[in-house]
Amino acid sequence: MKPKILLIEDEEATRFGFTKYLSRSGYIVQEASCLSDAHKALLSQRFDAVLLDLNLPDGSGLEWIIEFRENYPDIPIIVITGFGDIPIAVDAMRRGADNFLTKPVNMQDLDIFLRKSLELGTLRRKNLTSQRLEKKDQIYFGESPAMKKVMNLAALAAKNDSPIILLGETGAGKGILARWLHDNSLCSSAPFVEVNCSNLRGDLLASELFGHARGSFTTAVQDKQGLIEVADGGTLFLDEISDMDIGVQAQFLKVIEEKHYRRVGEVKVRRSEFRLICATNRDLLEETHLGRFRKDLYFRINVLPIVIPSLRERQEDMPGLVSHLLRNLGAPDVKISSEAMQLLKTYPWPGNIRELRNVLERGLLLAYGQSLTLEHFSSLESQPVFMSHDKDMNNLENIEEAHIREAVRHFSGDTRKAAESLGISRATLYRKLKKFQQAPK
Image: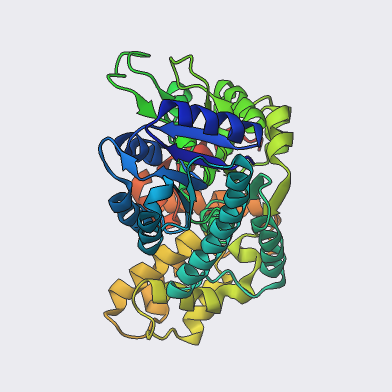
């Protein structure tokens, strides 16, 4: 991934010389002739370092350094100044600049300074990430052998930039793990951009991802920045990628391979360097056989698959998960009876951790701050218990179907309430019900 440099210099000839040399040396250079242009560039993309001239037409670069350092504490700044302004350059370093060079600039010295500054930026990002992780509560993933295997893979994935695909049932924690991967990567100080592909279709998804030019369609009254552009330097998380339309899949494949894209209705080619994480609750290989997912895109994103087990596959994690979720719900001291915990362990949890959180939140409301007992989980007790000797219940899909249908019946066909009780979206509920109807009996 080529380092991206923001060059802030009002002299056109100087900008041309810097850009020509740095481009040949393997950098991507974005030019800005004033502080206003620099501000716009910083809002639209992520940079690895800044080259700053102090004397600019719309303000002092010296004053701007303080504002920049507050908003971008990890990005190194190299000041370019005249020989007679060395005291000012030293003052700039006191305000937050990392180094300075005097004009005329020796280009080889500039290259050396830049490389050292980029190393400094990497160290700062690691330090900021460590500080951020120390301040917030650690996520509890579990101690079961299945989850330890998942976290070993996740630790490996966080150290490189290869695409990752997270596989697992709805509510299993794919989004939480995606965020953990971002927070523990070198791009953690850059944006984490999440897109749910099941909520947007066709042109709407393309516009959201790539952006669009004014007038490209009826409601496009102004230019719009796409989320691919926002994710530059950071992480793009595509949840439910299996729901992405075939046409958008073809466009997105090109972005992954070339890092280039165009806004809808625009001819200008743009570039974005992002870390890709995908997630789905479907069998993508089967989707390719059915013609609903491109094989070339499947092979491109299936570099490092991580399968998150369902909650019913790791019952030994239940006590730890319950304690963690109760802390998040603001009730760390609330106790839970052994009978209630046993019920939570044996319940099939088709909505996984998301459903567990909803059930605990409802239980806390009923308990009024008292210990949680069986009576606070009466909605679970009313659900049918599936015994292994029932041949129809040996298949997990049959268990899921029976449980979902029971929830819909329980709420008299109200899909909104049924989806909330299951801890899944209404779109997911509709998709599962349609799948049950189409399945051979």
